[in-house]
Image (cartoon, rainbow, N blue to C red; front, side, top):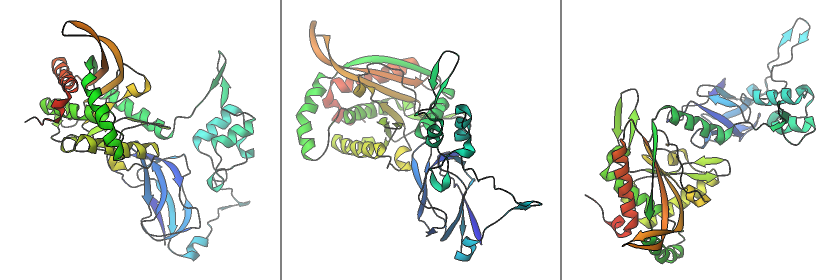
Length: 385
């Protein structure tokens, strides 16, 4: 018998994914638990295993198509004879052409229409004869999807892959929270000296010591004193869920968009352990080899846009968290210390919080706690009760 394999429930409320890459082709034999395709969800690229042994009889979804949980991905035949069977459709005048004679996603068909390309005449280069966007653009004689609006030339870029997932998540966050952002500065001159002193030792262990591990520890201590910022909102139950663990997500810029790996149990790890784990997770994210579970379970998020030269911003909360800290660049600035104007290392901080859960006064107190830890780095290593 043949078996229709559907997109399984991947957890975390994921309802759909984009078919990123097939790892098998029609006619291939597959073993149970063998990875057969890559699906890109709003969390990560996930390898989907075959539920049984057999032969790939028919692939039902093309690369680039969106599959919802429960959609048929492919048909697996149990025997070689079954694999060879061909289902043909006949009408009163002979065989009817199958609907899949021209393999192209709706987005590709729309592109062909915009560019005035007859899709039936396009030479395909994709998997199993699939027509790709590049095929259509090449057939149009251009190098890009250039069209015109009433004012002049425009280029159309399809929203897909990780960028599509990012867009969905940001909209979900904006729809479900009352955003407010507070901003302040911290003098991190002492922390700068501490990091400079320790980074050679860390490097000898293969660890790049950045400021992020110190920021994570400062945040974790402040969250312990202000637990309402370490929470999420249960919309259905109309409850605030206060987390008793400290899992901090760190935004990582990749070639395809922003990802947020999560460092678990920050309170139980040393600065060097955090630095090593951050390094490993960042590399996995940039290589798109990160696992789904490594992107789940955050209770708070840090976005370090200072590494790109930014100063202040209004970072968007990483749903379902209720707050996010944006950190700007560290720069030399004039600063009043002990009644004297001196040059100090200053970092800018931007805290966005959900006003449904946190009032402005508590948000300001939380930010001041973080500043206190950063300005007195010795206190970062003292566990609060």
